Image (cartoon, one colour):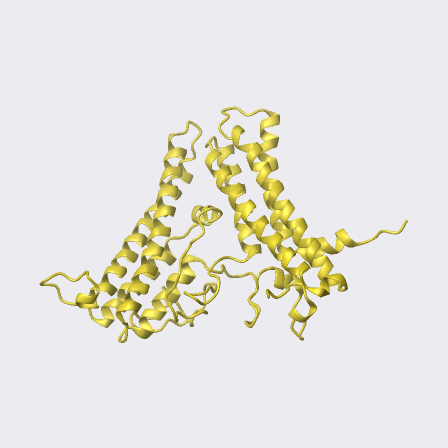
Length: 357
C-alpha cells in the first residue's frame, strides 16, 4: 500500500514539516532544501562521470551498454535544447522588433548544447569501443581505448554539460526537462567536486554543486513537484517576455499547458492516496494536506485553461487590451499554481478553517 504522505507517522521526530514532504523530499534521506535542481542534466552527467571514473577498470559489456545509453540520453537532451534555442534565436533575429542581444545569447547557448551533445556521443562510442568485439564499435585496425580514456571521455562530456547553461537554457527547462536514466549502481548523491572544480580527469570529483536524482532502478529521476512547478512558472514568464518583444509563442503555450495538466494529475493522485489512509478521517493535519493538494491541482488545471485561452492571441501583431490581459493572465496563473504547489499545507489550513462572526 502506498504510504500516506500526509500521515503524522510520516513526519520524522525532529520535526520535518508536512510541507517538506509535499515538496517531494525522499524518505530515508536528509532534507536537502530547494537550493539544488533535482535530476538536472548537470547532476546526472556529473554522477555518470563519477560512476565511470570509479569503475573504469571493471566495466562489463552490459555495464558499458548502460553507460553508453546514459550518454546518448544526455546527447538527446542537448539536441532538444540546441534545436529549440536555434529556432528561438532565428525567430527573434528575423522579427522586426527583434532583440539582437537576446538572439545572440540564445545562439551562444545553442552552440554550447551542440558541443555537449557531440561530447556525450563521443563518450558513448568510447565506452563501447573499450569492450572490443563485445561493444560492436571497434574498427578492424583500431585499438581499444584504455580505461583512462573511457573515464576522460565521460569527464569531458560532463564538463560540456555543465558549460551548456545560461538564462535562456534555464527558461527553456519549463518544457525541456531532461529524461535521463543512469546505470545501475550509479551514485545517488554527488561526491565532492565536479567538472570544473579542479578535479583531475580519471579521479573522483570533489565537490557538490548540483542536485540528486536516481539511477536505473534507484528511484525517480525527476524534479520535485515544487521545483517542476517553479520551472513551468519561469517558462511562462519567458514566454510573456518574448511576446512583448514581438516573438509568437503559440506552440510554447501548448507545451506549458501540458505540463500544468501533468502536475495537476500528480497532485490529485497524492490526495487520493492520502484519503485511503484511516488517519484522513481523524487527523486535521492529514485533512489539511489533502485539501491543499486538491487546491494546488485545481490551480494547475486553471493555469492550463489560461494558456489555452492565451495561445490564439500570441501571434497577434498589435494586441489590444483584451488580448494582453489574456496573455498576462496565463503568466499569472502559472505563478499562482507554483506557489500553491510549493506550500499546499498552508492553503489547506486556510481552506479548512472556520471563521466565527
